[in-house]
Length: 471
Image (cartoon, rainbow, N blue to C red; front, top):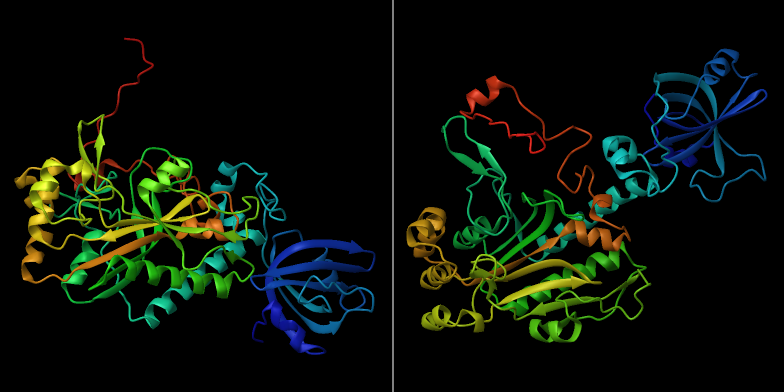
């Protein structure tokens, strides 16, 4: 007999069905045993009566929470007055005829019946496969999928092409620290995991794709930070032959569609989204990501804001040099090369951030597509010509073959979801997150590897001296 999902069982009253899932709860009342069976689609009350089959009844007495079972029985209406209006199966129950125990389970290290916030996060991450059984996280996974699906449909309908870009790429100075991957076949050389698909999506513009997007995995080897992840997901967009406003408009329309279709209870405070200059925002609010909600206790109010006209460069007191406010590929709001060189602190950029309820959820820019401007920007940043050629020669060479004006944006999917789902941090919307210091407690990663594997990669690990050891 083919399996029936729990949410389908109300369609089979007085018919025999086979259901499979986890025992959610079990309770015995004399000659009747009740269990709530759980699968991905919902809960179903199952009744085991001793007078139906004593053998099945005796087996049912063994059942404990989280055991995996297969049950065959007849769907019937619940006795009047015992219905449960909170369940989609609340008007029916399954009278069991046969029971198979597919898998037994130890007592769980924590309850999965609660929201889970009260449980140690380290314990939840260690047993994430159990944590994901709770309804809240299952809902988060499903809504994550729905948001991605809606984004894909919207961008496809607007002429964008989804293109996957490489995970193994080249290490280039883009801001954060790269994760490096040693090459076995090219001894002494390394790949890097992408901090973002920045250079690839610009090369796709050179390739004539014109409208690109990707639900992109990104990797940044950052110092421990409470609400950051070593790997994360962004909605990555790039467009050719556009002005800044074209990009802002496509993003706000996309988000409006997502909110309208998936979160209809939410209210966007202002549409089109407000646009404010960076200097004005800093002067008025003291931050470039202000929370502009009328009632900051109301999580269903969404106050979106585009912050525009950022400075092109910022001075680093520690390093005593100019750094790019966004990244080196951002287009300055001037083509005067001498001005860029001589007065970098006065140059504005075609850069923009998207802010929601006090959080930056995205950022982007128009890109420099003229080789001489890119080379000047790198010069201001202190990069020598040889270094620029080594690190970015592939991009500069591509720009010699006809490159359209282009720009784009990347939205942090995890942060956007955390706000829309009213979650306190992004780990609650990521299936298998890491700790703040980038450890995977479930897989016990990162971990040591054997000498033979290191030898194949031409790597030798030097053990650090114990700083607490007496000298």
